[in-house]
Image 1 (spheres, rainbow over the protein chains, first blue to last red):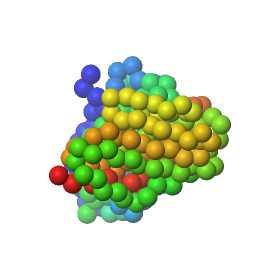
Image 2 (tube, chains in turn green, cyan):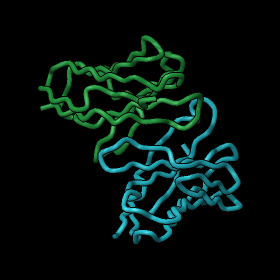
Image 3 (cartoon, rainbow over the protein chains, first blue to last red):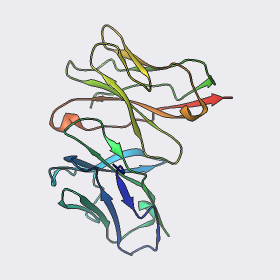
Image 4 (cartoon, one colour):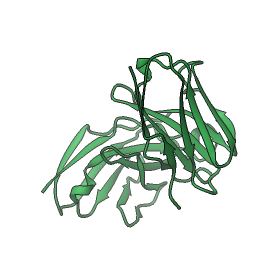
Length: 112
Length: 112
């Protein structure tokens, strides 16, 4: 298996623009997680899905953030409008049941 | 969330064993002890986990105190590639308790 795939790997955008991050989990995994990592706040869980259904979105910072999982092999995290403080590395991870989580390589987002 | 306490950093020499400590005095009876590590510019990766008994795998060993209030991750022969941030995390196995909550971790440096 290719592991968790994230795209793009790097994204530079201007404040106010919409940003969409994409994730393809490992085939057969039924949990998908979105994390954000910054120097100040460390690694934070934003939202997670089980069988494509959002279970806990308490980590989503505000209404500008939204996440979807239309099917078992694809998820998106959208920021609209983006702000400089959203600059971070965003990781997607997947797992089978509540087993070990496999992380993708991350998307480095820079909002200018 | 049950919390863990780790030193900020540790140094080791290449090819020597490394013992990374973790305190978790408020651990509950159903919490598993998980270790993840994050190599530079990569997503976190699973290392090992345990409940009560000591555990071994190809990457490391996990020694758990009899009262479960502390544990130690053991790398038997450190290599330069083991330089990373190591996270000790308590995790339940059902519902919201199954989330991974990352702290600051311990930064391991390995000297050639």
